[in-house]
Image (cartoon, rainbow, N blue to C red):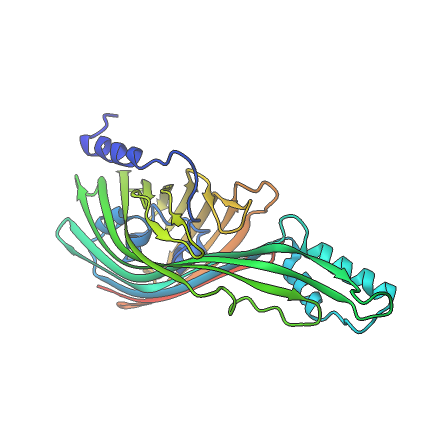
Amino acid sequence: MRCSPWLRMAILLLASAWPSYGSTAEFVIVGPRAMGMGGAGVAVTTNALATYWNPAGLAMTQTVDIRVQGGGLAIDRRGLGDALHDLENFTTSDTSPDNLARGQSIADRINRPGATVSVNGSAGLYVKGHLGEHAFGFNVSDVATGGGFVSTPVQASQPGGPATPITVAGQMALRGLEARQLAFSYAYAFSDKTFAIGITAKVIQGAAYNGSTDLTGGSGVSTTDHFGKPNISTTYGIDLGAIYRPSSWARFAVVAKDINKPTFDAAGGGELKLEPQVRFGFAINPYSSLTLSADVDAISNKTFVPGVKSQLLSLGLEQTILSEFLSFRIGTFKNMQDASTPFVPTAGLGIRWFNFRADAGGGYDFREKGALVSASISFTF
């Protein structure tokens, strides 16, 4: 099959965005449809959320779409949450050797290698329109990522000697970045939507956080109030995307996000640079009401937790019935950078009533006790 000049041009553009090393923020799952389908959204998203997933998707349908969405994910690794709960309930006034041993056991669980927490989330207003084969969109949104890890190991001791109150103490570091953005997208489809390319330009206000919280036996552990005062800086970002549809039932897609390496002022001094993210997607429609999709991160992405990287493989299915009155979705995803992690199951539901649509999706990691949830409402014309 002969490769069109437009396809060759898109490949060259995306190749130029390929990072020399994997040092990026993780790819956040935005929107309930993609979340219900395991995070696979690069090849299937053609509504206003394509301004995030892949701007080329805007040109694959000629619709006007207005939607509001919000969602988030939290992961508790190696039982850190349960250990912190036991720390809060620890009785410091019990001076017995058995209680000292219990305090040290809690400390050892908190200090366990890999015991960390990660969070991310997104929310915003997304709009899509078109003029013939020309499609455009914009969003006003916030995409946040963060994490916590033990910075000062927790230790159990009796500073005053035997038969004195027990102290169990340490410290947890908290890191995060909010990307508050105003994004504008343009896309164009060629050859009866056989091929589409798109670009998104973003003005990004970055809020970088660098805080800590004390871990003390018998006291509540607070994280939300201890991320510290954010360091605010503004820059811009560029995303490129392409979709190739060789037939009515198959689509291949690729997106490269933040190809210009946006740089923010880091909290505590220095710089925080976002390296490009590259993700491939594939989707097929065995018949008109069934969609099968898959996404994969081409490179590993750094997170705010030392030693933890993200490189997701996402698989999803969507079955619609009654002319899309109902949409049922299932999916799964796995972090390929952690061989020990399982595939995380997800599911979602969509309801359409004329031009109005409501969607919800979520998932749960039964091993790491990680949960994700997303919901949206939209009007499509």
